[in-house]
Amino acid sequence: MPRPDRKRIGLAIVGGGRVGGFRGALAARHPMVDWIGLAEIRPDRAQATGREIGADVVTDDFRALIARPEVTAVIIATDEHLHVDPVLEAAARGLPMMIEKPLATTLADSARVLEALRAGGADAVVGYTQRFRRRWLTAKARVAAGALGDVTLVTSRTLMNRLVALDVYRRAADAAAVSPMVISGTHALDIVMWMMEGKTPVEAYARSNDRVLGPICGGIDATAGLITFDDGTMFHVSMSWALPVSWPAAVYSLEIGIVGTEGVLTIDDTHRDMVLAVDAPQAEGYSPDGRRLVDFLGSYPPGDMAFGELWGPMREETLGWLDRVSMGVASPHATAADAHRNLMLTKALDLSAKLGRPVRLPLEG
Image (cartoon, rainbow, N blue to C red; front, side, top):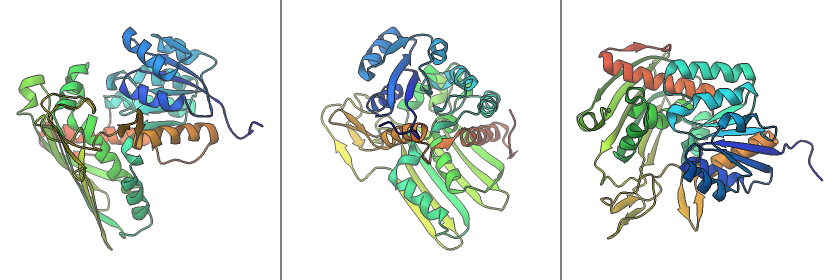
């Protein structure tokens, strides 16, 4: 018999690229999902992804899709600069959402989206997938339990080869609106701010350089900065996505150290524990490239493909969200407010680097 405390799901997916396909394939087999519609503006991708996820409806009009009476939840998986309009459309109906990060690429748009979500009462979460890696869940639990005492210092270092950066700048409607911090450094920043829950950032100071990506696409190579909190806690963050293509991480290499008054916790998420070296290029990862013959396996943020299935954090994040929507279970997803704060901090670091001086927080649109 149907359980009255469980809700059936009619799912709209806006964006049929890599992430929309991953999440849609998982949703198609979830026991509470009865119907799936896909909105995708590229006809070839719309048909391919639609077949892959068994979509009941495929269209190029996200507004028409979100307005359908079958739709009770929405996944927004478009390119970063195209999130705002479908989120506002779904917010007007008060539908629960999973939105790929960021909410928007400008702080003003992000604030507008956050206000619309609050006004519509929508339960919106944002795809900070790294929260679902077991090591970060374990770290969060220990920090929250007070194992370190009061956290006083956090350091993070993120290294990426330039394949992601080149792709992001190629797709961006406005290259000035994206940066290593806004698009990729935000994952490390979200993890740290999750660990520092309850602390209030009051100042950001940073420096950037652009000697590699600047001449190629007008982009920023790297940013290093310091965020200071109202209680004197410090967060030192550094991020480069301009490493050579041959850098072995398929995408992300991250190291974090958390120092408290009663302990220290270090986390190595560089994936150097599994190294694959081959004679012929491999076809998996964010952007396969014939020059890359060595990989740190596990460094692709969504997880890994094995036996035709995606395994890893994006699988757990997606299934956890579907359980959240259908059964109301608690989950560690990032909220829309978390995502807006993260964008504000990354924009503040970028602004500080541009101005050459500290920036007071919070930064307004």
